[in-house]
Picture 1 (cartoon, rainbow, N blue to C red):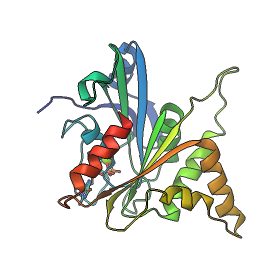
Picture 2 (picture 1 turned 180 degrees about the horizontal axis):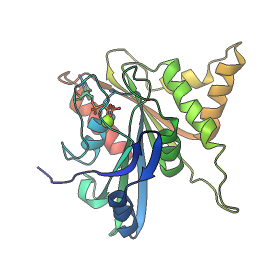
Picture 3 (picture 1 turned 135 degrees about the vertical axis):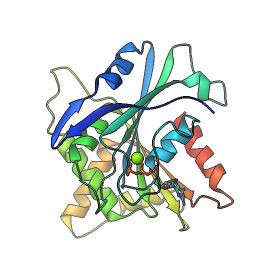
Picture 4 (picture 1 turned 30 degrees about the vertical axis):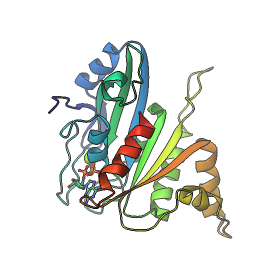
Length: 233
Ligand SMILES: Nc1nc2c(ncn2[C@@H]2O[C@H](COP(=O)(O)OP(=O)(O)OP(=O)(O)O)[C@@H](O)[C@H]2O)c(=O)[nH]1
Ligand SMILES: [Mg+2]
């Protein structure tokens, strides 16, 4: 078992957010090429679990089956791409910077849009994990965070990196087609709010992919996790 362990990056004391020195130091020390991946989405959906699968270390990010929320703020971990690539990818000094955010949409926990906005500013791959189903609420959470992000004033001449959306329905029991996300985003509605939401997601993420991961213990579980992992690495 690997000793990879995530460090705190963004933490809260009451409503006040601050950057944790341990996480900052980890990011500052990284040289070379950095590929930032963030996990955001529904609370209790298995974000930390999937993030740990990605780096191939079971306990890298704290994950639990409690009803209460587990991750607070954002945790971060860096791993050399060459260490986790099954296909020999990864130049020397190329790192995945994996950030695991606290979930939203949990009736038992605070909902802090700031966390997602922060994450959406940093990640070049945005992994949105929905719990059991691709809900309108999940899309709205993403849309709200993108709207808040658009209010952030960047330095002149600075652009956000091109970002890919990787939408994962975890603990899935439904028969989704691989094109489900595109179908959701192309759907036409009379409600201008729902239409605008879809336009925003499409515009912000020109590159998109969709995965499902069934309940643990189902025959295709390991294969599905491997597909997500291969795609991200
Ligand atoms: N049945 C099943 N359980 C899963 C799956 N993925 C994760 N879990 C479990 O779901 C529970 C929640 O996982 P976490 O990784 O802590 O969830 P999280 O999304 O990080 O939650 P917060 O940090 O509170 O937002 C844990 O008990 C996981 O083991 C899955 O595919 N199927
Ligand atoms: Mg978590």
